[in-house]
Image (cartoon, rainbow, N blue to C red):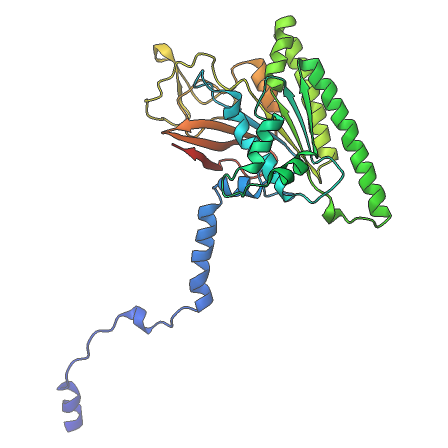
Length: 342
C-alpha cells in the first residue's frame, strides 16, 4: 500500500513532443531535395545553352538536326540587322573557337549583300574580342578559323535558293568523305566537327517575290525552300545545325498596343476595345502579351512553319530578352535569358 501511495505522490512527468521520438532521416534523403531544387531552378535559363553552343544532345536548344529560327518584334523602326544578328553570330564564333582543325568547311552563311552582321570584317573582330566570358583570339588564329567559313552573299530569292542547292551538294560531299574515312579507319565519328548553316534574310527576300507576283506565289516558293532546309536538317541530323535569321520582324508593321499597359495573359487588345482571345496562332511572348498576333500575314506564318525551334529577341525594361516561343521537337518551350542589360 505504501508503494502505491509513493507512485501517486511522485512529481508529474514533463510533456515530450512526439516528433522528438522519431528517428532522424537518413543523410541521403535530406540531401537529395536541395540538389533537385537547384537543377530545377536553372533549367529555364537559356544563358547556359548559348554558352554551350551547338550540341549533339537532344536536350540542348542549339543543337544539330533541327532548324532554329531567330526573330525580333517590330517594336522599333531603328532596329538594324545587327540587333537580330548578334546572338546567331555569337553562336557561330563560339562554334569556330571550339572546333578541331580540319580541311572541311565548318560553316556556310547565306545572306543579303547588305547584311553586315556576318561580313568577314565583323566576324574577324568578333573572334578577336572577348565577349560573354569567351576569350579573344589572336589575329592569326582568328583568320585560320575564318578559313573554314564559306560566305554566299545573294541579291534576291532565286539566288538564295540556288545557294542553298550548292550548300546541299557540299554537305553531301562532306558526308560521303566522312563515310569513306570511317570505313578506312582514318577518323572516328567523334573527331568530325559539327557544321553550322546560317541563312539570313530569307523572309525579306521572299517579299521581293510577293512584290513581283503575289502573296500566294511568295508563300509557295518560301515553303519549297523551307522544306529543303528541313530535309537537310534530318538527313544530316548528326552533324548539321541550321539557323534562320529573320530580318523582317514579327507582329504588325504599325503596332498599336500600349507598351506601358500591364500584361493580361494571352488576351490581345486592339483599338476600339476590340478583344480577341485566345491568340489565333497559339504562339506568343510571355513578356509581351498585349500585342497583335506575331504572324499576321501568310508570309510570316509560312516562315514559322519551317522552323522547329523559334527564338524571339525583344527589349524589356532596358534588357534584351531571348525566349523560346516554339519548340516542336524538344522540351525547351518557355526557356529564356537576358542577353544584354543597359
